[in-house]
Length: 266
Length: 251
Ligand SMILES: Nc1ncnc2c1ncn2[C@@H]1O[C@H](COP(=O)(O)OP(=O)(O)OP(=O)(O)O)[C@@H](O)[C@H]1O
Ligand SMILES: [Mg+2]
Image (cartoon, rainbow over all chains, first blue to last red; front, side, top):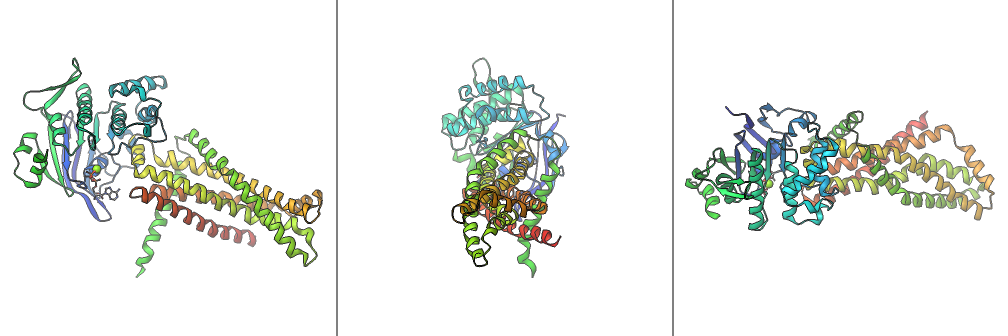
C-alpha cells in the first residue's frame, strides 16, 4: 500500500457561516496526481490552503503525510509544511525581494531543509534554469511578465524538492503557448522527481496533459504515452461540494450537465 | 440587546490575541535582526524630519502663547519652565506619537495589508516563516526603541524653539532660559515623558500590524485598513495618555 500523502475526511471550511467547502473527502497517494476543476468561487483555492493548514477546518479532519494536522498550532505546522511546495493563484512572490531571494526563501527559512549557505545560490540558479529564467536573478517581480512570474513561482514551489506540490491555477490568464510551456514544466517536475502533484485548473486540457504525457529528458519535451497514466484523478467542485471524482475517461463519459460543461467547453 | 457591542468586543479580543502572540514571540527564535534594523531605519530615521518640524514649531507656538499669558502676571521669565514641563510631560510624547501614528501605523497597515491581499502572508506561512515573528515582532521592537528617542529629540527641539522666542522677543539670556527650564524638570517628569512613548510605541506598531493583517478584499480593503489603523491608533494614544497622566498625577 503506497503512502498516503494527503487525506481530507468530511472537511468543512466556512467564512462567516457560509461554507466555502462542505463535507469534502478525498485522498491522494504517493506519486499520484489530482486535477481540481470547478467554477469560480467553488472552493478550489480553499482546498489547497486547508491542505497546508493555512486555513482551519470548521469540522472534519485533514491528514498531511499521514499526520493529523487539523488541530496543530501554527508553530507545529512549519516542519510538515516544509515537505510541500505551493504555487499561489496570483503567484504571491514577495515584491520587496529579488527573484533570487524569492526562490531562495524556502531554502533559507525552512528549518527542516538543511541547506548550507554556500549551496543556496547554485541551487537557485539551477531551479531558475529549469524554468528558463536564469537571467532574471537580480530583477524584482514587478519587472517580469505574468507568465515569467508564474514560472518563478513554480521554481520557488519546487526548490526544496518537496514530496507534494500544489499548483493553484498555473495556466490561468496565459496565452495557449505559455500555458502549455507551464504544463510542460509541471510534468517535468513530476516525472523527474516523482513528486505527488495537485493542480487547480479551468482547462480540461491541462488535466489531459498530466494524464497522457510524460517527460522525455532526451528530447526535453513531452511524449504521448499509450493509454493513460495510472493514479491521475479529476475532482470537480460545485459550490463547495465535490460533484465528481474519477479518471479522465470517466470524466469524458459523464452525463451530468454541470460536469460535462467543463469537458465540452474546451 | 447587546448585539451592537459584539463587533468591537470581538475586535479587541482579536487584537489582544495578536498582541499576546507577538509578546510570547519576543524571546523565541528566530529573531530576524536585519528586519529589526531595517524597521528602525524606516520608523526612526524616516520619521525624524517630521518629528523635528512638529516639535520645533509647537515649542515656538507655546512660547509665544505662554509669554503673552504670563505677561499679565508679570511672570514672563517663567516661559522657559512652562514650555519645558508641558513638552516633556505631555506635548512631546503625544504629538510625536500622533505624527508617528499617521506615518507609521498607516505605513505598516498598508504594507501588511497589500501583502495580505496578494497572498504574500499565506506564502510566508507556507514557506516556513511565521508572519508574527517576521513582520510584527521587528516592527514592535523597532518602534519601542525608536519612539522614546524621537520623543526626546522632539522635546529638545521644542525647547530650542521656545528659546529662540525667549531670546529674540523676550530678551532672556541663554543661561536664564536653559537654567530655569533645567531646574524645573524633575526625575518623575523624565520618567513620565519616556514611559509614555514606550507605551504608545506598542499601540502604533501593533494597531498597524493588526489592521494590516486582517485586511480583506483587494486594494479597497488596504485603503480601509490604513484609515482604520490611523484612527484607532490616535484614539488609543489619547486614552492611554490620560491613563498614564492620571497615574503620575496621583503619585
Ligand atoms: N479569506 C477568505 N475570507 C472570506 N471568504 C473567503 C476567503 N477565501 C475564500 N473565501 C470564499 O470562499 C469561496 C471559495 O473561494 P475560493 O477562493 O476557494 O474559490 P476558487 O474556487 O479558488 O475560485 P477561483 O477559480 O475564482 O479562484 C468564495 O465564495 C470566497 O468568497
Ligand atoms: Mg482560486
